[in-house]
Length: 393
Image 1 (cartoon, rainbow, N blue to C red):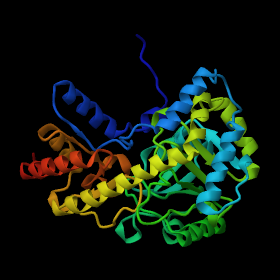
Image 2 (image 1 turned 120 degrees about the vertical axis):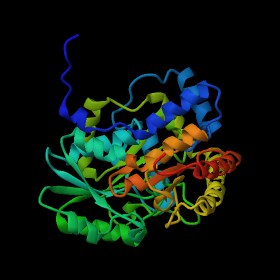
Image 3 (image 1 turned 45 degrees about the horizontal axis):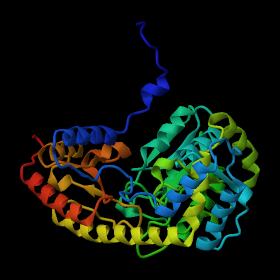
């Protein structure tokens, strides 16, 4: 076989470290080991039954063909209605672009805004695909080191420090993965004003909206009508495998986004779009709220337990379903520790290397996407793992 010559962009895009952890966990399970999964950012609940039933009806009714590239009009209207309900916004449904997953929404925005060599600023740590999509369109991510002092979020001061002539925008996340922290309405307004002053575009990942604890997450659209918003049915509505998300864009960008969507993926899955209409029903929302409360109970157990083990979680996560823990006091080297704990105690965790460069080797992410009983078992196993752990092991 002739030697393959893959593009440099493929070489530059790193695989998910978490997928290697997952593969090892599956191999251990195949050997009969009882693995506790805290590595994958996927709700452990199945899709709510009303949504499943709507999907089954859609298949039976023959909803298996293409839809308009921007999405079913009824679904775009329903998404706009969600912004009216949650945020008091009269959002024009024409600004809503339905996409095959939140990842496709980011791909559209990247292709729309980023010329080769141009840059988008984002926090470090952050979700890894964000920077990889920019590389795919020959742009660059500027990872801005953040820490507990800003709750791992960007600020206008940090943006101004790292901005240069090649920068075209800022990507923020609220609630954020992996830290679970939120941006307030005032902070979102300040970020938007900073971007306008610098001549850039603000993009906000709101994929974990709905999964907050003790407070509601404001949308950037409440304070900046010109921002781009990424969202998804995957997390709050538990529809990860249906591959359905959306993008809210300024009205003048929609026709260009439609052209990109037509060429990149034609449309989001028809059956999934029909099913998603049921996500807004009262019955589905009641189920999702029960699950949100279950996630809060899990967080309220796991956070103090992890701190008692010696990990530092200096900022209490207010949303999503993750803890971003610093293990410097326990010896650092989170990748080695994640390897140690899965091999010795069969708990799967994500090393910080997935989320950036800034002190990544001393952080790890714990997902509370498993039952409270399993989390209790995981804490016991982590305690044992720490007893047999040393940085040199």
